[in-house]
Amino acid sequence: MTVRGEIAKLLFYVCRIFPIKKNKIVIDNYAGKGFGDNGKYIALELLKRRKKYDIVWLVRDKAENQFPEGIREVPYASLESIYEQATAKIWIDNLRKPTYVRKRKGQYYIMTWHGGIGPKKIEKEAEDTLQESYIQRAKNDSKMTNLMLAESDYTYCKYRNYFWYDGEIMKFGSPRQDILFHCNNDLKKYIFQKMGIKDDCHIFLYAPTFRNDMTEDDLKIYQLNWERLLETLEEKFKNKWIGFIRLHPNVAKLDQHHNLATNNRVFDVTSYPDMQELLCISDIVLTDYSSCIYDFALTLRPGFILARDFADYKKERDLCFDISQAPFPIATSEEALMKLIKNFNLIDYQKKVHKFYDDFFGLYSGGHAAEITADRIDDVIGGKFHF
Image (cartoon, rainbow, N blue to C red):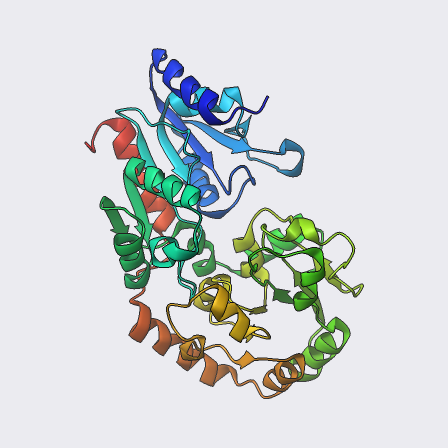
């Protein structure tokens, strides 16, 4: 049973008759999407510590997800989920909580925002493009938040200046990025096995972002000549290549008839729950304006931008910085993309990546963010940290 609105708000208050369970941690990822993003890596670190924590994950479709032992799955937006949240000591979420959610005194909320370094203006910075209902939701969420996690000076300033938030921000990285610092061959083989893909091939991941008010016909902006692209990659890098395409959740449901994976060596990985694992095994990433490429650059592997509709996109989403400042080769057409791939120089690219992050962002990430976050959770639950 799905519960929302005023009834859900009332139930949050009713559930206050039940005591807060100090060992309970409730995690949500993209409003019930499943086992991924920052929450996954925090949960895995907590499980490693073998403490008697009751970890609850709010999920829309249990059948689509595989959770490790030690995590309880509870239906998102259900009566049960309201009870679990109302009686948990710790909340972890990467998306703004609905306005009906009400936090109690003694509960601790870690907001692990789903974005990171990227050119798009967000939250208060883009206030004139946001619906009033979302603004109220964001303000309510920030009012409840106790802690945010920043991986750079850039995101720290975003959270401080544009998130309607004046609470604590810890500077040590983003838990979901940890895997990118520890992505060795054994880990890659494990992910390949889990996906059922042979590990003797190289992966080209195409992960574009969404546009506002898209329809099914608008998906043509994502089409690629995959056959030619894979041939170009094999000619340049002398390896066997396959393609992945991953659509943004906001538009994934629209791809009913286009079948953007148009080649038998191209796989639609939109429903795969963990983007970070896809970044870990990918050898090249292509996007348009998604922040995922700024995470991927931490691996120092090649990233490209295909900005076919840049002028229109700038009208829709004003940008914080000119993407030409980024280290990624930028194409405005498929033809130009092929030329960039043919002329790509890895050493020059890696120098640009280092300079970009050092000069522009002030990066804190070092591969231990999940551990540090779990330390804070231990301290809150153990009573060593007072708030």
